[in-house]
Length: 199
Image: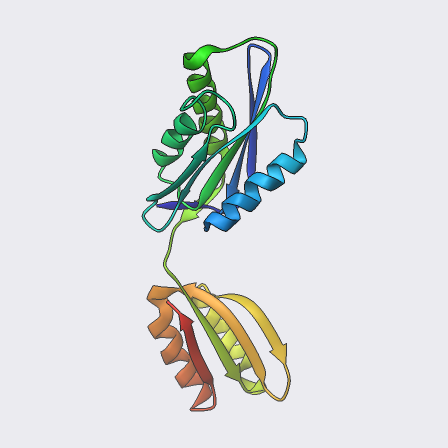
């Protein structure tokens, strides 16, 4: 599975109706709600804001809405496209500005499906890798060596604080956890405190 790394936006026009599709990284239902609300706030004059979300490690948690379009003509076709993309932890919100011509159910299904396809073509993604979180307390003299170790293990540092010692928090691919433990033991000679927070 892939996950989006940033927001992306695309637009198509169908019989003078504008369809703006916005792909947003989301990993929980709460984030889906927030994403849809923020798109509504950005487009207060839109006729409809439809969404389709795929979440979870295996991409098996779904959410969609037709937002007052006829049942199953908007959210469902967009969701089918997202499900087929191999991308998870994503919400595609589709903003429609009505152009004055009714599209009919078949036209709506095609327009919303095509709109989702457009944004999925350009959304930046990366492979979904199991991440582990950790915290670490290190002496100042180990800082440079630890930072070098982090580079080799694809560690992302999420927090650093400097006091009597240095406290670091970060994430790394779960497969590299063993190497982090070995490296920290090597460098610290018992003076590095490593806590695995979650895997």
